[in-house]
Image (cartoon, rainbow, N blue to C red):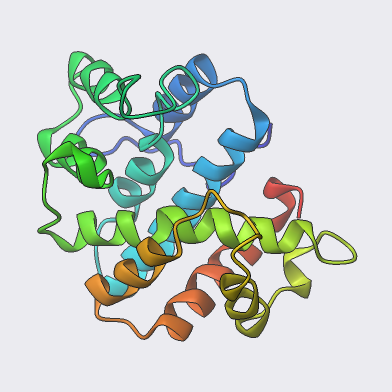
Length: 198
C-alpha cells in the first residue's frame, strides 16, 4: 500500500503521520478501508490549506478517524469508541479524539470546531466519489466531475451505504455550496489518484 502524503516531521501535538500510518496498517488489513482513510487524509489536508489550519494535524486526524472500523464496523460493535480509546492510550490529544467521536452522529459529541465539521463533511463524500470513479469506463477519478457525482446522488440504488443526507449536511455545516464542496474534495482525491488505484 502506498503512503500518500508522507511526512517525516513530528506533529507538535503528538502522533506523527508516519506513526499514524503504521497504526492504520496494524489495525486495518482491508485495502479499500485503507484507501478510504488516505482519501479522507487528502481531503482534510486540502481543506486545512484553504482554511489556514495545520495540515499535519488535520491530515493525520483524517487518516485515523476510522481506525477501528474493520474490527468494530458499527455503533453496536463500538465504532468509533474503541479506536478513540486506543488513541487516548497512545497519548493523542483530546481535540483529535473529540473530532473523531464527532464524525459519528450517535456518539453524543456535537460538531463545534471547523476541524470537526470538516471531518464530517469529507467522510461520506470521499467514499461516494470513489464509488463513482469505480463505475466509470476506465475506473478513473479523471473521468469524474461534479455533474457525475450529483447524478449518482439521485440514484438511490447506487452506493446505498453512503448517506446522501450526511453529504448535504456536511457541506451546509461548512457553509460551502454542495457543488463547490464536491468539486473541492474531488480535486483533492484526483491529486492522490495513483495511491487510490483510481
